[in-house]
Amino acid sequence: MPYARNQDLPESVRDHLPEHAQAIYRETFNHAWDEYVHAKDRRGDESREEVAHKVAWSAVKTKYERGDDGDWHAK
Image (cartoon, rainbow, N blue to C red; front, side, top):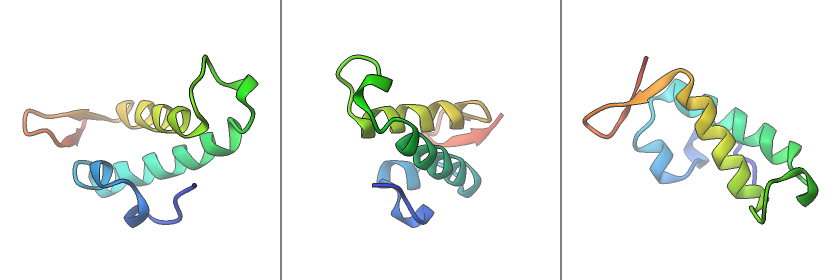
């Protein structure tokens, strides 16, 4: 389920993150998707997709923060 383009990201990501943050999200998601193939590498019962989304959001949060408008802005 890796994402080839930012346009392929979930709507909730596309609608609230600026283009650069979407690229961070996409690249990090794809890397985590490859890294957490085996269930033994994940915590608890989380699916590969759940872990990849969590890792991607963590990467975005290092450079962006959510504003009062609900969108994400560079720190």
